[in-house]
Length: 487
Ligand SMILES: Cc1cc2nc3c(=O)[nH]c(=O)nc-3n(C[C@H](O)[C@H](O)[C@H](O)COP(=O)(O)OP(=O)(O)OC[C@H]3O[C@@H](n4cnc5c(N)ncnc54)[C@H](O)[C@@H]3O)c2cc1C
Picture 1 (cartoon, rainbow, N blue to C red):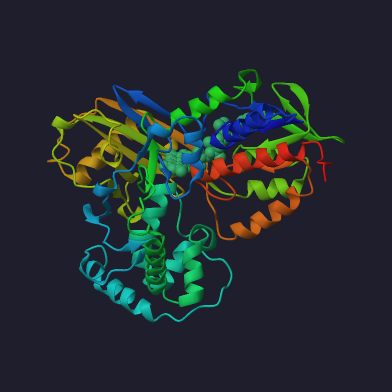
Picture 2: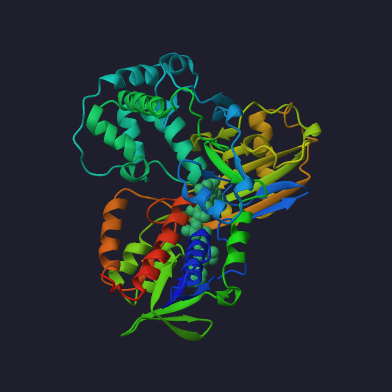
């Protein structure tokens, strides 16, 4: 079976790796991995500059989803897995140029602790009263999908959208709470609303259940506990996430990797698929699309116009990261914690800033500080056309205004600055995403040999992209095996 993989981001690379494994195990598969850029890895792009790891794209993956750490272990990178430094985890929201810490007890946008919520300067008295009254919300029958902003506003008011939901979603994924689907992005909260009414009561009940489960799972006295290994909310690789890309690249057949080769046309033939790239057409039995959905949609349009349109209808946001490496001696002391998020209402270019040397230890030399700003998002795409020096200057100015000149004196100049632009790289799960996915799955099921993988469908983060890429490859490799006649 010959399989074309279109796109060599983490989803496409994971698919190629899985096919290579099947091939080594004797499955009759061959593949060609098409990538329009000269480099592999898609949004993952890290480099080491003067011993400091600089991540142009993602900096880590969420530890709760096992696919990424599992793959790293398989690739021999287990000893490189590095947990986030959760002991120092603290995040601030910028409110009128001041850094206000997120109150203790906040879980997925839901306040669960009375005293920290009552005392935080993050919310006005009116919002705090609303948060207390939220405990009385009656259960609500499941209805149509709605935006995250609508769900949060109904429970906690508009200030909670502005100061919590919006900065958390835009600072992490460049998303817009007014557009994102509550059912897709926050499915647990939607379920809690149906069951408990109050999200706070639902979250407290879930927390209690988890504690009971953990206590039950504790080994009996005298029985040694299983070694837990390094564990933080986030995990990264000591030398940068590029290690994962390099290790995958080393495992796949270099002769089958087509760099700088954008697929320009696709046809369905009587027996399979015809893929055209660089003016040459090749026949394949199956195709795994691991490109962004908008690129897949454009190529699939002539094959199935409805499917093409559905795929092109998945919105994407663009973003920019600006990494600044400082000599720590030039700075005053940064606030404790991992960094801060900036609500859109603050009117700044920056959506978030991470104190990288604090979030992951051992990836920055001792006397250096790495500050990484995140810009752009659904509400500020125009920034993408600004030149690098303007973006760096804007970030330096905003850091000085937000952190103060004692922390960021005018004389403090970054020793190194890197700007990375990510045009239409992050899919946005807009209201109605689940319904759109049901329609997409139904159309794909009518096209034998077609698979979709990547961040547009069932999880935006790296672990989900790996899971979908490997899953698509495995299904195809298994479908190509000679039928089992033993029984
Ligand atoms: C700035 C930023 C920060 C992020 N932070 C995190 C984070 O901290 N943690 C996390 O888990 N996730 C994070 N994400 C999300 C995560 O990185 C991405 O969702 C994931 O890497 C996407 O992988 P992918 O393989 O689906 O797509 P991509 O990485 O976008 O790869 C798709 C590939 O397809 C290629 N392609 C497109 N069209 C064609 C064509 N016609 N022919 C051939 N090739 C084509 C593209 O060149 C690209 O290389 C972040 C993303 C960005 C942009």
